Image (cartoon, rainbow, N blue to C red; front, side, top):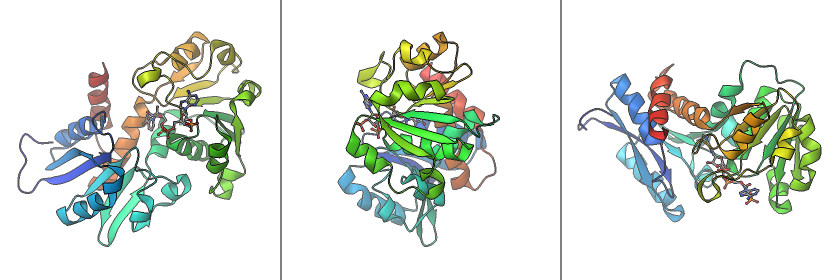
Length: 286
Ligand code: NAP
């Protein structure tokens, strides 16, 4: 964001409910300031029943694009004129771009998730994902993109797990298995990648880990423990992984990279200042 808003300032933003916690305005406005562009990125508190009205309002007001967060990531799908293949595969949208004929929805969470894992050969590996919510869907698509041979999603509700396993293309569905928590200790010894995609470790669950040290100990040497949570960092889950001698990755880089991918799309730029976005986030999180 520039020092002043002019009559020509173009608007980007994020819709969610709640939205007060979002760090996206911080990251995006830092990058926009570095690029010295006449844009501003704003938080929009939009209740679920008002999403369609908000979208129509953005249309007439000339909003260039926006991010979508909880609880709208799936609900917005039928309101869009076009959905990218990756968003269709994940079944959720986190980034929307204005087009002449309406709105294009895509999903940059997958790119964000994958970014810290690039540079290693993942073919033939096993990934175990804890949790079966919206973020777990992006993680499954990311693990598939990386080339993991087997992808296990672990949840606590059979009905939700059954729903989770539906609607994937064959590339994903032939590698994806859903399991209940009781099966976890038999899966962990094979896992090269263990992802926490639950919210255990943050908010009211701060200081807790979805698995204990005994289970963490079962991971093979050289495995990676990846927690999508970025605040606090490290979480208890990552503390246990470090104690076990494993590589621990928190969710901050995913947040930065999904944001950078969205900003490139809105501004139609080949690169954006990712380091500025990362620095803004790190300064805020301390
Ligand atoms: P969500 O849709 O609400 O899903 C949360 C999942 O956690 C559900 O599967 C839920 O199980 C499970 N869960 C919650 N408490 C649990 C417990 N005590 N034991 C076992 N499972 C439990 O949320 P989401 O959008 O997927 O987000 C998940 C996490 O990822 C959050 O911490 C979020 O902050 C993080 N995230 C990070 C980024 C990033 O850029 N770094 C992006 C997106 C999300 P049930 O379905 O059985 O309730």
